[in-house]
Image 1 (cartoon, rainbow, N blue to C red):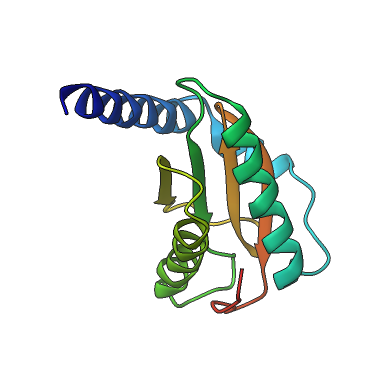
Image 2: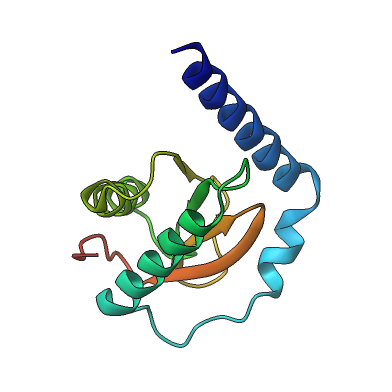
Length: 141
């Protein structure tokens, strides 16, 4: 039981450090350099990228094997509950697969330049961005 608590504490601490480093490292400049998608990701594309992300995390068997997903509203999206709906969708999708024990979902107060998006990180590196259409909140991932 104590080992599980220590592992969970280590994951939480690593996640906090990672998120703080994003804030302190001028990350806002990096996110503006990413190309703007012409259209949002389809539900099928979101499912494929999420499945691949889960498989990548499962192949890593160390402290960096935590899946982190950060949600950002699009520039023109007014409804702040969209991120909560999108986060619930991704959380349900991960839990339904029963594939991961550790994952972190976070909502960023920063908006993306174009469409709303979810950024997927593994081992401190961004591997995918899932783009959501304006005011899109439901999708069976």
